Image (cartoon, rainbow, N blue to C red; front, side):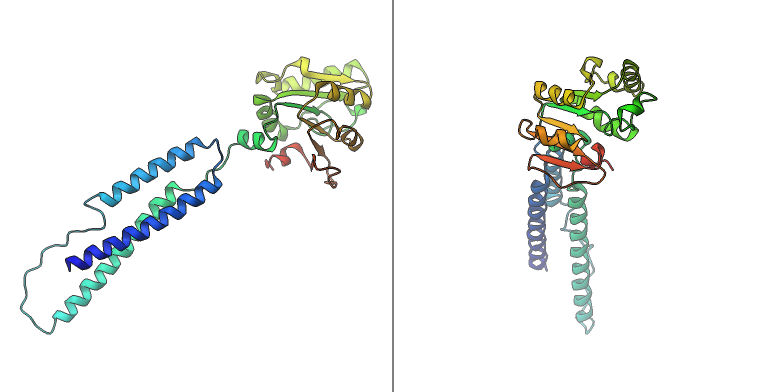
Length: 268
């Protein structure tokens, strides 16, 4: 009986080790290089499971002593009962071990900040037009009446300002439109994060003026809704994002397309 229990325990350790190796391999395939929290969880899980394996209260359970019984025909029944109990105990230990591993090796969900950095390929300077991207309005004529910041884009925009040098720009028809835009951005709290200041909100009177702004700033990314500007800048800007409800085909390999800024970062 002692030899059988030892053999069963060794088999459990082997199965547990194989299972742990598979989980570790899958985890490292999913890990982001900055997921230090996940690595800490991995180390904790390894120590925890090692203690389970070496603990006296682990798979080797001490069975209560039974009084010796004279040999009889019921000996076979007792042997079968012991075998069944051993199988059930082994299965229970396997299940508990698997639950421990599953708990510590859950997929690590990246934060929005990590997603933004990954999608922008670690770009450090971004230029972005306002109409149709940050604002609800889509043409300069609408800005003469009002300017409304899209609430769904705020979280992404603030994450971008945390690690990127962000410039917002737009064509306007008069000074009043400029004031309305700046007031709307201020009311939305965009200037309170510290990553964007009013001096980095640029205005011009023509579409070509926006193109000139981008060329002078030489950003890593430019975000726009005008396909003509996207095409003109494709040779000069490393990456571009075209915002369009129709999701047009990519004109070049360095131009990405999305129905909205937040959709590009998986926020909708």
